[in-house]
Each structure stands twice: as C-alpha cells, then as structure tokens.
Image 1 (tube, one colour):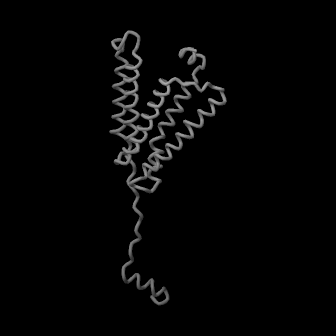
Image 2 (cartoon, rainbow, N blue to C red; image 1 turned 90 degrees about the vertical axis):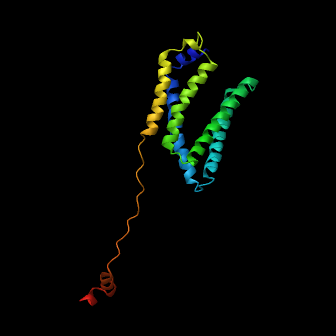
Image 3 (cartoon, rainbow, N blue to C red; image 1 turned 180 degrees about the vertical axis):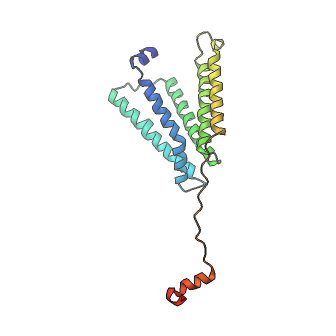
Length: 195
C-alpha cells in the first residue's frame, strides 16, 4: 500500500498518534530532569537517570516490537541498509537524550533546554528531510511558506526561551522571634510566680 493510500485508509488515526508523541516528548525533558534531581547525586545523577532511560528504551523499543513481530508472524529477513539507517536513527536519538541531560547538568532549566530542542529540531528535520528526499522539481521548487514556517519555528523557540515563566523564589522557613530576656524569665517562672 502506498503512503497516500495508507494514510487515507486509516482516516485521521495518524493525528492521534502524532499528538501522543507530542505529549510524550513534551513531558520527556521535565520528567528526565526530575529523575536526575531525585537521584540525589549532583555529580553522577544525570548518568544514573540516563541508565534508566536506557532500560526504558530496552523495554519499550526492544521487547514490544519483538512481541508484535512474533504475533504478526513477520519475516526476520532485514536488509542491511534498513538496519544501518535504523541504528543511526537510534544512535542520534540516544545521543540527543544524553545531551539533554548534559544541558541540565550545565545548569540549563528544562523549560529553556526543551524549548531550544523542540524549536530547533523541526527546523533540522525539515532541512535534512528536504535534502534526503528532495521535492519534485528539485530544491528550487521550495515555496516561500515553507521557509516562512522554518523562520516562525525559530522565532517561537526564541520567544518561549526568552519569555518563559520564571519559577517562584524558594520559600524560607519562618523563624520564630526570640522573646526579650525579661519575657523569657517570666515565662520560665510561670504565671503564679510572676505576680
């Protein structure tokens, strides 16, 4: 089935999956930073968190597809080119996730780091996809709304980064005022002796 037929036959299900990805990747940075901080290790916490990210990838990206392939009775024949590109994709994805943790470790806040990542990644994706899969008519067939969209994505990432809501300052514990020496002496003697 061609791509157009597959997407048309499936209706709008692809939008639901795309939005699920938006939500999953949208919370990824915040959850990853929370996990890093919860490790309680300012030096190695990010690496400990990444270890569990790898475990999650194993559970989700190895065991789940294996189960689906077995259930579908799929052929285990895989072309070298497909395996190579898939390994490259997995590697750049893992490197990106690791670099997010390094950015957090270098005092980047999740709001800023992820705004840069998600503002910049669509631009990189659009440029690389256009180069690897050029449109009919070549690169000269690219229309101005496409370029405008790239510029707007860059501007959006910058605006979110520059004007993000700032967190509330930490609340300091209230310190009870120390009583004056005379009041402390009266309190120590008790009310009957104070008269």
